[in-house]
Every structure is written in structure tokens, then in C-alpha cells.
Image 1 (cartoon, rainbow, N blue to C red):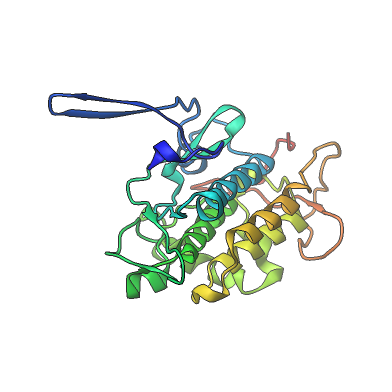
Image 2 (cartoon, rainbow, N blue to C red; image 1 turned 45 degrees about the vertical axis):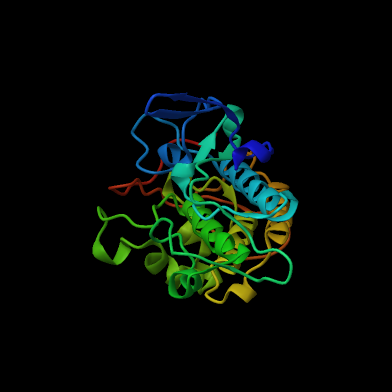
Length: 275
């Protein structure tokens, strides 16, 4: 499938090797590895992804999906959206990889593709899991999960956490339902270095993508528009944020906030300035 797909946010297939029983695919080299390795369980001494980089990654992934849905002929449903499948090139530019589960999307008057349910636990849309009907909106749900992971720095499922926090969707639900609590979704590794209105907008996009009913979810082109609007509000550290915690809820120009730092596996107030 990759031989006929060409977009800056899709990993490029360089060639293949077939010798005896060996079958190898050769992809372009991605120097920064997977998004998963930079987002979860970041070791001490390794700089976590900053806010602006996370937003750029979200935009790039969405643009890659938009190409699959709207430009590829016939359209393609990715079906395996997850942090491990997002590879990072120079400047952390994202590429969708691993198209082993991708399916040609519905064409003409068809609204879905009936198929055996496949994908990664937690990322699959509930309607797809129940019915086996795969649609473009299945990818939208999976993107909503990925976006929530970018916001929170949490895996969709993490057995190492206390039981009430193991499922990202279960843990985040009370915060997603109350705009005044959106700030509590922000990854502690961000150290409060983000524009609060941009965080709110990113959370809202994730909520829209995660709707149970597929017809309520946005199309990917609308998601791209929303994310580009968020990207137009980058975080800048020209002025140190105030020491007190301020509410991130509001409208208008972005308001920089500084929240108490909570490291993964512990708590504490940060001592370093945002960079």
C-alpha cells in the first residue's frame, strides 16, 4: 500500500529484500524513534517533549490522516493509530508507520467496511468493536486517544498505576466533563509551560473525537483546521510565568499558567524555569 501513498507525514518505503525465506521492508531512517519513547516513562535526564512540539506532532499526524482519508485514491483507513506507530524525523516531524492493518475505505455509496475487529486495545472506537463496521470515523476516535496521550503524557492503559488511574479514559473522564478542570489533564512534565486557552482547545478537540457516536465526531479536515488554530498560539517563555496557580478557563488571548509540578512517581514543586 505504501508504494502508492506519498505524503510528508507518512513514512517512506525505500525498498524491499526477498531472499530465500527472508522478506524485509526498508523504510526511511527516523532518527528520533517513536513518539512512545519520548512521551511515556521518560527517564531522568532526558528532556520531555515541550508543548509546542506536542502540538506540531498532533498537527502532522492529523495531516497524514487527512491525506489518507481525502487525497488517497481510493481512501485509506489507517486503523492502527498509536504512539508506537508514530515515528519522529528531524525536528520531531511525525510520520505514520506500520500500515499492516490499514484498509481501503468505503467508496461510492458505501458508508463502512465490514471487517474482523483488529487494532490496539483502548484505541479502537467502541462502535467498531461492537459492530465490526470500520469507517473513517474509527480513525478519528483513535486520534482522539492519541491526542489525549499527548496532552496528559499517560498511556491509554498503564497497569503500573493505581487501579482507578490505569485506564486513561476512565481517569480523565471527570476532568473532560468540567472545563474548570481541564488544566488537571496537562502532563506534569510540562511544568505548567503552556498557553491555557490552547490547552483548553486541544482538550475540546480530543473530546469531540472521542464521542461514542461516530456521526458526532468531526471529519479529519475539521480536526486539522482546529489543530492549526491551536498551533497559532505557541507557548513562549519570554516572561517567567507567575508563581501562583491560575485557572486555565477563559477565552481570548492565551494565558500562561504555572501549575504545581508532579513528577511521574512522585510529587514536588518545580525549581526550574520553563525553557
